[in-house]
Structures are given as structure tokens and as C-alpha cells.
Image (cartoon, rainbow, N blue to C red; front, side, top):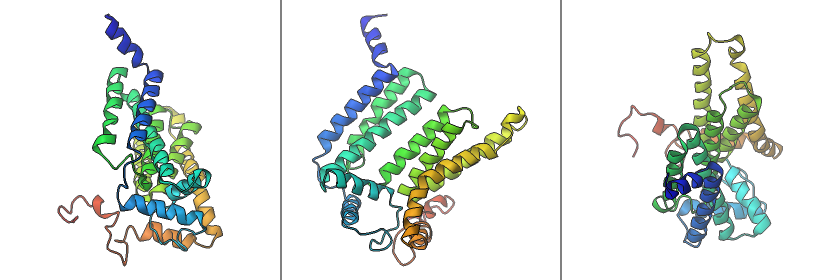
Length: 276
């Protein structure tokens, strides 16, 4: 092989190429960080994080329908580094880098190294083509990162009875859930359905593969570990019923008195043309 081919082969070694992707996402994020606000969603997230720093509490003095994982994470980061837009953009850059790297790692499970590397490079285009996404700080980005981690862990582990990977999958689904509940719910249901289908198709195999309770139990345990802090926090403040109403009833009932679109409406694929 030529020197160029040898160089490319060395560069696409997964560990080295993963490091290259991290460096490139960092450069992109630093370049785009000074850009202006990406819309009202980022402004709302920044304002809410600032209010949390001053003692306001979700579902009590802050009226909101998302679950608050991303908001409290940004408030925590601001408590450490200051209440500045740069902190939010730095956190958004970390999440963007995590998404690119974990999707590249997922591609390695499905493709050869050269095609996975090409996919990883293509992902960098999201920073340019999807602005302000992956530059501005949006509450759903953390949920999407967690969803990517869940899919990666699920693909990487062929043994559904393995405790660690399945707890990890459940924890990732839980983080997705507490950051953007619709994504966490749909992701969790899809993974649970996949486990049921795998169990049904493999039920004639070895007896140790018959149990569906073990992977489901590990999945539920991981989910509970991620979701428990949020549930306990709001329960301790007497806000658990309001959390359920704001996060799980309002979004699925057209936000009740508001004018938003229900989370459930896009799933009704048979109602063509009804989403306006």
C-alpha cells in the first residue's frame, strides 16, 4: 500500500480518530460560541437556570412542562463558573462533542472503520447545517445525548442478561426522560418492545435465555436510579403531583389551557395533514 493509504489507515484507528473528532468538535464549538442567541428556547433555558440559582423551584414558582434535568444541570454549571452565556455555550459544546463521539462509536458497531470514520466526519456538518442546534443551549440536547448512549450500549452488548450494560441502558433512558420526557418515554417503550421481540424470537433457545424478567428488571433498575433524584426532590417539596401534571399530563393533552401541540399528535401518523 502507498504511504497515503498507510497514513489514512493509521488515522482511522478508533482511539486516534475518536480523539481527532473530539478536537474538531471543540474547535467548532469555540468558533461558534460567540454567536447570538439561537431563539426563545435558549433564552428560556438561560432565564430559568438563573431563577433556579436564586432559589426558584420548578413547578412551584417556575411554570414549565419539560422535566427539568437540563435546567438544573445548567444551573449547577453556572453555580460553579458564573452566570454567563459562555457557560451555557461551553456545556452545549460538551454535549455536542459527546453526541458526535458516541454516534461514531455506534457506527463502529455497525460498519467497518473507514465507513465509520466517514460517518464521523459527516456528523461535523451538523454544526454548520443545523445552527443554532448544537451551538445554542437547548434542553433537549442532553436528552438526545442520553438516547444515543442508550442505543450504543444496547448495540454493544449482545447478552441482554448482562447486568452492567442493561442497567446502563436503563440509566441512559432515565436521563433522557428527566431532560425531555417525550424522548425518554418513546425510547424506553421502543427498547422494551425490542426486548420482548428478541425474547419471543429466541424462546426456543437455551433455557438461560428464556427469561425476559432479568433484562427488563435491569432496565427498570437503571431507569429508576436516574429518575429517582428528580422524583425524591419534588416529592420532598410536596410538588410531585404538580410534576406529574405538568410533565406527563399537560404535554399529552394539548397543554390543556395553552396553545401548544400535544406530544402524542405527531405519533398519529394516520391523521395526515392534521399537524398545523
